[in-house]
Length: 344
Ligand code: PMV
View 1 (tube, rainbow, N blue to C red):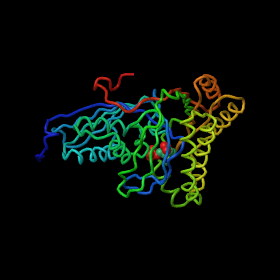
View 2: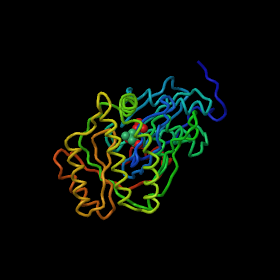
View 3: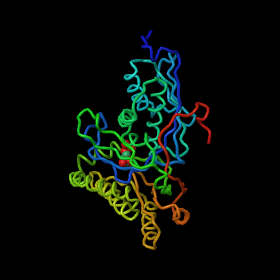
View 4: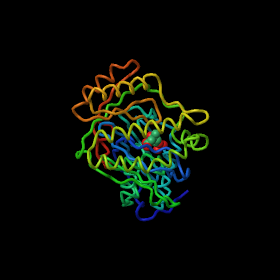
């Protein structure tokens, strides 16, 4: 079958590569107001990391008769549908049908609560935008990333980032914007990895179950604007204590909401709990540190730079902690050379 190609996609092969880092929400996103468009019921606020990354190349090639996806050097047909859906969004913008080969490398465990879908889809949108010469604004790239994985909207940007809930039915006002550069408040994040298994219940299924069955859903939505306002003010003032209090509150509230779904969503294991207690004890002893946890068992301890070594040592000491990864806050998603793809 021959395909009609517009000028922008007329070349036989068009390729580009990009890198994006995961982000960790301090004020959590949980719940969708539109499942198809991936529109959230609440706004959220996050930090983008620096030393964990996804590097992705995309190659649109008229010789391909279907999309292909490789993750860390291996064909990954399980994720291909999501990747193809993302490629469809890019193709629709370019007015082309050309299939693509996507190759991604993560330097951290995939699907284990470390936000690999956020960095993965942000990298794919940035690479696809360049390969197809779409010239999309950052807000448009954030919207497209959002359509693939909500939290990916935030990984387009670096540092402290807010993703607005928006009100438009078509989602045109629900995208992320950068609030503060990483260098303006260089916090550190110590990630305690307590399991390397892929999580049993993904975030979309978890969110939908929560919205349908949790008795706390309304309270969650109603409280979010106030939490966001406190967090924004804390970030602007670099007020660690204030950010710590509101972030732990948002995390625990999200998990309380999910725990109260039917059947209840239990993302933590025993080591997750021990890490939380350990972080609380460190903070009580005067160290500037707080925890946050997403839809998985890993604990992210956010701290001021001078506390990072002590926090990492304390996390390593918790029974059941398999690995500890320390990272700073990082920059926005960006284009890279194709040959940088798998370089360490
Ligand atoms: O966008 P998703 O499907 O990766 O969902 C993210 C959900 C949380 O990580 C738990 C919260 C958040 O705001 O990132």
